[in-house]
Length: 151
Image 1 (spheres, helix red, strand yellow):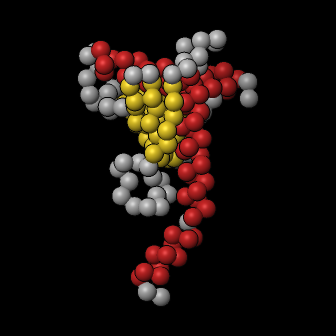
Image 2 (cartoon, one colour):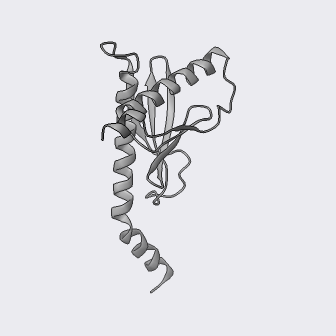
């Protein structure tokens, strides 16, 4: 078997894992979009939030190898924020905007709302000159207390 044939075989063998990972990351980005729409609280949807999936600008191989980041632009009214996310040890690890980072071990509604509000505060700080880049250290969102007590 030639090296070229070996490359093709490896790509085919891992296609299912890559596709499952891509679906999971896109579902996460979609859930973050919905959390941003409701981040203002019940009955106060943000109607000017949109989501546009994009190839990760840092990706140098296609199809994306397992473990690669998946990206989307989130339009938040007058600005756009690039969000990149990948799976790592069962968690979603990502970055957004100018240096914001996160790790979610759980994707409950409360976890996603907390991330959405943090993202909004960080981006507001960047535009208001309060937050400098790079952003604060990795923001971790542990499993929410309520979800541990009420499985």
